Image (tube, rainbow, N blue to C red; front, top):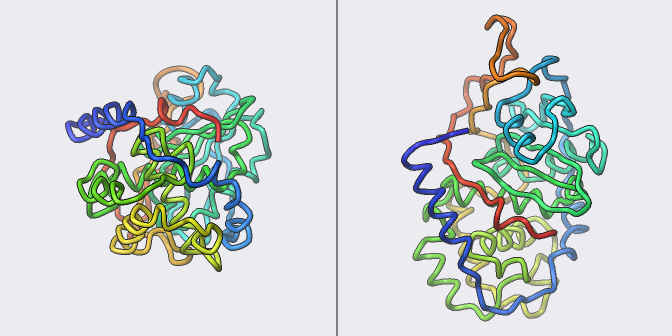
Length: 302
């Protein structure tokens, strides 16, 4: 995966912030009451799926699958071309995942494309409880999170924050965020109390709801003003970056796909001409990667 001095700085920042628990009370017990509004208003984007070359797997997928104790041979790799982006995504689905491949493909498609473009690969793995994390722009979904739109938005929000989509970057450690956070009485839910990285991600879920669902979050919760400054900060940042959280539009940039490697073994032992083409198309800006990992702070169940 990506590594650089900048990436190392981001990784150290994530490790530092991950231990800083927040003490403001939660506004809601969870954000589960947002799911149906997302389903009703963030439609499934039509896609075409193509099997990845047999015997090959993106290197980041293989690394993450093996990191979690699974066998890369049990992964179905598909190239998914969504109608709203000229460059396809390569998704990695474990055959024993807690839902069909269509859940992965369709639920990911609901994430507004200008946010979705900040995710490289999505890996689905089986588990007895739902959780997820983001590793440098690669999202790993466990258990029943495979069809939980809240989690896809939350994990994509880590990419926006930690890959530097916003003017104030990383947003979760910026003076702008901390000063606005200080003015609020609450955070969105108990998961937001984990640290500021998770708090920004949950506020991104709130902001996405406010911007795409009629009535919005502030029409759903009469006490929502208790998190107004956090919401307004995410909303301003996403709007100034190109209305990243609003549905519609098309992709303009992407993270470079990770290189293909053999499912078995450690080196690609086939001629270059036979390797799957993972290059992004002309007209798509390739954004620089950064090395971060939210595994430790995203270990709680959703």
